[in-house]
Image (cartoon, rainbow, N blue to C red; front, side, top):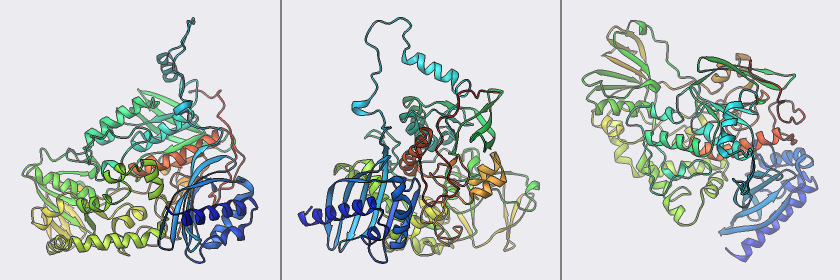
Amino acid sequence: MTDLATHALHEWTAAFASAFNAADADGLAALFADGDCYWRDLVAFSWNIVTVEGRDGVARLVRQQAPRVGPVTVAGTTETISQGEQVEGWFDFETREIRGKAHVRLRAGKCWTLLTSALALREHEEPSGRHRPEGALHEAAKGRRTWTDLREETARTLGHSVQPYCLIVGGGQGGLALGARLKRLGVPTLIVDALERPGDSWRSRYKSLCLHDPVWIDHLPYLPFPDHWPIYTPKDKMGDWLEAYAKVMELDIWSSTICRSAQYDERDRSWTVTVERGGETITLHPRQFILATGLSGIKTVPAIAGAESFQGAQFHSSDHPGGAGFAGKRCVVIGANNSAHDIAADLWENEAEVVMIQRSPTTVMKASSLRRNQDKGFYSESAVESGLTTESADLLANSMPFRAKEPLDQISCRAIQEADAPFYDRLRASGFLLDFGEDDTGIAGKYPRRASGYYIDVGASDLIADGEIKVRSGVGVDRIEGNAVILSSGEALPADVIVYATGYGPMNGWAELLISKEVADKVGHCWGLGSGTAMDPGPWEGELRNMWKPTAQEGLWFHGGNLVQSRFHSLHLALQLKARMEGIATPVFHAPTIERPPLGPAPAGKTDT
């Protein structure tokens, strides 16, 4: 840290606050670089998750939001560093309703990137640290109610005589992370999940499944994994952790509960949601309806001529029971991304004969190579040893807007290709088709754009290169006969088992299933940046569409993504929901709907029918 860098950042932040409070849109925009500049805001100024680009984008945000969310006060800058002409550092700030933290990068005194992220609602801070609850009444009192009494009362009344303000559909890591945030904020929330126990979405998967991301990325809110936790978490261990997490965080969950339908009442501004639990049909009336059903939508099984005549077993990858019992079977895996590779390797380990059908090129990167890069980044043992907290790592990782990050992803992707060139040569020699994204950004580019088209190699690629797993590339399936898969090339593959590793539909498919096609169409595409690349149609959005932010359907929210996204953005979604419950004005910049006045808690009178 240098005095000069600190002074430059201090001067910039003071000018930023002054221009914003004066609603001087052009003056504030002039603080940003001419041409290539970005302001990424996570709820704090926009009540949205949005990135504006260029001075015109900055001016639009200021012009619309300054009179509605200001004034802003800025605290002193911290952790300022200087690298050549670039100065970067942190500052704390407060708006009318939000307390937040910002990260800024200056080039020649002008802002290149600015991240502003909400941390808390000023009048509704989480009861932590010195503000934690007492937990006990240290005096004699008749009829005192213990913690157990209160938990039993909540279990007895929530969803019956007391309606939840938020209903979360999905009890995986996303639903649990959001439920924990809302619990800490005092938002009455009910989580419903079709499975018997929290964590069963992991326990029910094939035996060999492990997380592909290392432990430093995967912590849940409030309760990080202990420091002896393995780097890559086995799926059953993850399931047990999620169940323990739900219990420790005192989440209100209805397991073995199926959500059947949901309708929004525009007049009452509340939902009517029908669920089935324990043989009983129950009607709930939440104000906010959150679909936390995973990264994708409903599983996709292609309609292939003759499939109904197949004499063997056929199932979607999500229903793979594990390779045990398939010894000696001729297995055809349709698809060539993560699940296809994992299942093909699992079948091979259990002495099956496996052929993978690769219909289009796949981006492959070795887990060890990604780990090599991550060990130099924000999520690593080195970062922990340097004192970097998970919360700071999340902010740093998200301080780079998606478009600004693309050149860095290209550098990383090309370095991996060069370092692993012999590996890729062997894979190509087997006939496997490789790509690294349309612009060489690799998995880092494909994940936010389409969340498909890649494999993080944990061993299956060597099996393909060695011919242990056969591959047929650049072909489709023409039809299925009684005991064979007929390819578009005319080749007949004898088969006892067909695995459809063919992915999932879009997330708004759940909205269509539970609400209506009209609502799903109104909400539109979920996920993707609008990059105009394969499976990510434009126009450019710059943030993941419809994720963790207001949608075109009032009261409908989507919460998904991997573990790090669930942890980080669950805070932003929880703050938006809490603000609405408290009747705080939430003027949304770049709003997908016509704004309406703030709405307080749901009336207590609605009960089960």
